[in-house]
Image 1 (cartoon, rainbow, N blue to C red):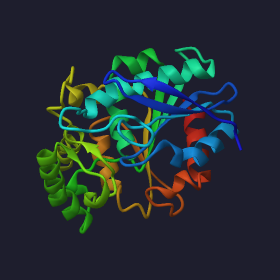
Image 2: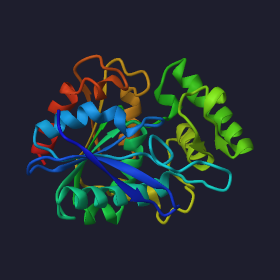
Image 3: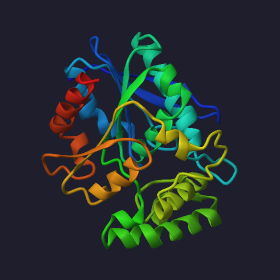
Image 4: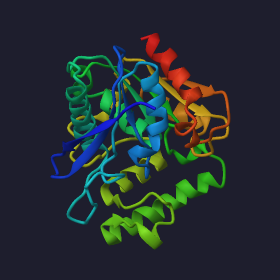
Length: 282
């Protein structure tokens, strides 16, 4: 088992977000980003396996999840743009400093589900070039566009998205606890509403406080992007990956095995082997 530590990263909204750190030896930094409702600690097995292959690894938290101190309220909101433009670059910089790596040390993103949607946006930003992000591999990272799913998931995304958006508008946030029928945990109304619109249109537009046309800037991404899934992942179909690949230039690949949407993070051999090959080819 690899030794690990963490660093607390201060965010512009006053919250802090810990980044788990696993030292490696000379290979690109792997920056791992979770899916919606997932905490960083869930990914410890895959991080340890990658560190065992010589990669320094950092695991971030999506804002408001895991051990992030951000709490969504009516007067405390964030969305896709805030996480892509603030949380991603700040976490990578802090990880590199803590691991003794130069700011320009090559970095590969390993993303899960929503982490890959935000990752595609981050790749289109100047901070990704400044931090020498040389590629991204997504696992179960696709678009939530409802037309890329069959029922019952299609109906859940199409109609459930309206329900979730309506509830979060009334309350000012998506609730945790007994009312959380999705098990996503407490979520920002802005973030959840942007996700719901994305699921209806396959477009990331009208994002709160956005400083660019992300639809245009994502099409200009020129680093390798590989979107992968396991054959039994009902939350990320091949068509879902292909829909995200229409927004950011990417290859889509099905991995061997039946590890579903989440289990690969706990049984990491297939993913670590593919990530190793992907990084070695960059």
